[in-house]
Amino acid sequence: MELTKNIFFNTDKLIENSKVKISYTGKFFQNNAEEVFLHYGFGLNWDQVGDIQMEKTELGFQAELLLGEGDCFNFCFRNNANEWDNNEGQNYSFPLEKVQHELIVLEDEPVALGNARKLRRSYLWSKKIRLAVYKIITYLPKLISGNYKKRATENESM
Image (tube, rainbow, N blue to C red):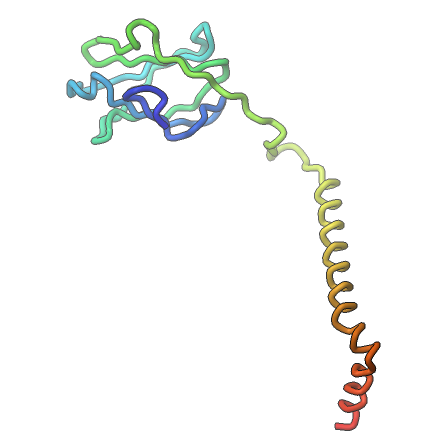
């Protein structure tokens, strides 16, 4: 996904505590810089500040990092000549989405099987009901017409 000109992410949403791959094809890539560093932080106060060297590829400079916690992901770029691409002093800033905890099952926590058992039980009952309906539809007309008994006696005589 392209969030702004010359900056791409490998995901549609930036979510806290998840890995993201960033591709940069901005002015440093266009000017054939040898090295580019991603300078980043999280939240309005730039908490958990870090620098990571980006890898130069044919598609631009790329880096993978683990997003931290905060309301937003802030970053800018620096080349080996200590020049900055900081969005004309504004820095690049994008909102982070919170992790949906109700969908996460941690390995250390026991899993409640109550809901799973209820689902399994209801699934089995639905299968039993479908089988009973199938048998009624298939064999009831034969019983009423008497064809069912005739076949049974024919099979015994053979």
